[in-house]
Image 1: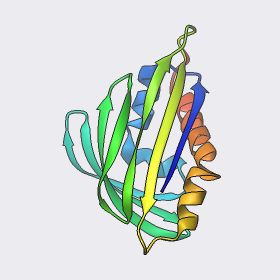
Image 2 (image 1 turned 120 degrees about the vertical axis):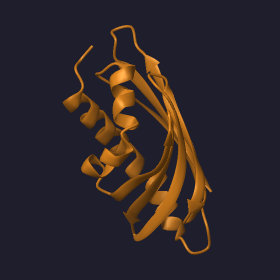
Image 3 (image 1 turned 180 degrees about the vertical axis):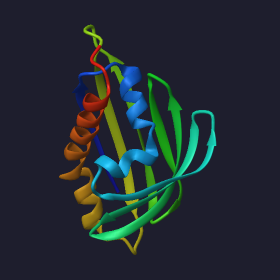
Length: 144
């Protein structure tokens, strides 16, 4: 079981950043470890999405993502190769109109998933993931 939290300042508004973090099917375009994301159910801002991640080995899992436009989103595991996968984004508006994005993740693997995957996800890859979201948002979103 591992948990991590990290924050990053992003040069776009909370609404613009939310548009990026809630565009799940576009994740493989800028997150190299994700091979595929498929939305299997959408009901307003609540989405069930199946993720295929290649990190040491290929992992498949389905998350329920509950979005709050401009404020953030959270997720919980529905099924897949993890025992637990929960977390979320909280978007804090800054005085200059930009965003401080707070990210949290809690993952737990089963006996068929190497512990090295969790170590890599919450250690080395988390900062790279946040930077990828920042770069994506700043490249397509208008500055405030």
